Image: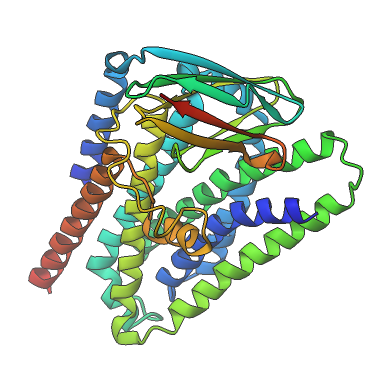
Length: 111
Length: 272
């Protein structure tokens, strides 16, 4: 048990220290306004890690979710959030806002 | 109203299933219901605090605050589940044999129970803070049917709680001969599932490489959104398209806990 705890602690410290080693090379921005994503379609390069910055301009929180991208993150009202995605193979990856699923829809297109 | 009910149900389900398994695994321990209830109450209280701090939390650690916090919550739960399973390998059989006249150290039993209380409150915290944010958003969103929100939320909560209770009742039907192994196995899978989510969050925050994204894709066979897929997601950590790192964390957690359990059993066998 102690070994596990020590192992986990070491793993965590190692993770924190290598943060800089995995800097992403491409950044795209996404806005949430009136429970919709702007733009609804994001073009990103395939085969590259992408830093997605989502800014929520609404007064309600939203949860960015995508099964295809295997990502989910709550974004508080008026806050912005960073989500790393990819590297993706070419294709279309839909995402949606779980809290306003009928209107908040979009897709990442990797090409 | 149904929109609110569905989202609340989805959030509650995960916590309810975890509580169902924990309740079954701690059957027969003194004061169990009180401990678990305390876990739920503490989790709800903490959810409200975390929900109100979401904006600030997100800005910590270069925008990775939320992932780090959630990963910390999951990591702590994994350690508690691991510790409980290893402790139970040593004492569980005695506990099951004479549940009333505890031959084992009572204080140590209380520690094992408090570990599970913490697991319950962490599960409630994770799902509860998201639910609180969602419902708050509906309220200030000025939806015309404000009465529908609490009704929908209660409906979702009730359905989720019922699912957890049904799982609990189902597990209790496992014959006594297999019961201990079955609940330990479920706790083990739960811990591995959480470890995989832990890795996913750190990949999302770019604190861990993904190794392969995804390692495989079985969404054509069983997607994460299907009812069975989301059930298996909670219970055994099913992910239709996991990153390689998630699979590595899943396997490593399983191996570490199983090894710890085996060693605890060997210790018990040599001491009795």
